[in-house]
Image (cartoon, rainbow, N blue to C red; front, top):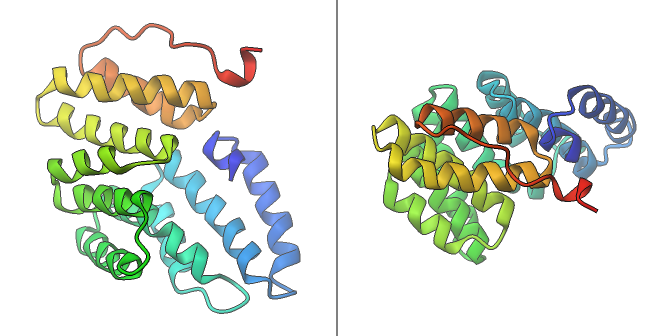
Length: 207
């Protein structure tokens, strides 16, 4: 998963193949699911939405030994993002409904934040994005939400509001070493009219 989030394609593919070669023959669904999740997330963070969408949908229906309910639940917000990126609006709304049902009786602030982000994506609901940013307890997921909101604000011809969200996301992604998302935020920031300067160095190299 770390290789996926950093956009390290060859490392992610190799580690995923190695994990699946062990997990699938022994029907260890949790590890098989995580390995498949990493491949799907790699496609998502590199902007390959159609491929990511296919992978996430396969995860959602994977049977015992090939997947796991925990992985299915955790991937639902990513499935929504991939569906929207791939233009499958109906699929995104279906996934939002499924995620809402699955979190109804065990909602944490972070799961409610992710649900709000999903609704923001599927329904183009700016207030839902604001709710997500208020509820997030996971900083990385909060910055994914900030990026998605900034993209929408920029496309709605509101560059001033977009820049605040995009700069926040860019700086944190750079510090985390999440280069694909950092590049995406930087590109959006420039499109919003900011001459982006170098953010602080990644935390891992600032010792």
